[in-house]
Length: 93
Image (cartoon, helix red, strand yellow):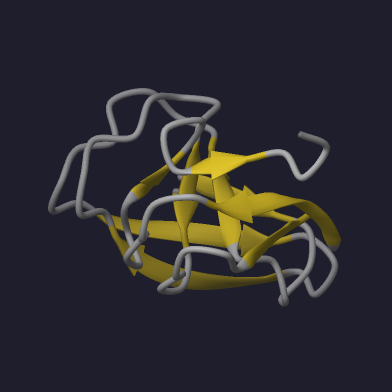
């Protein structure tokens, strides 16, 4: 079963495509561009449609999703944690 989707192997986050992702779950993530899967363990509950970190990120890091810059980290994020507006902000302001 596929739980997460990302486009590019260099993406730092993936999107939950199923409901009910809970902390401790082992998740399968499909990398669309490569047509392969990787696994990641959820450290927090992840709502459907929200992002999960695929790598540790520090404050100030650029976040890559769909192969493009989607913003900067404003609070540390560990692999498997929920990545959303509480720890990622746009660089526009």
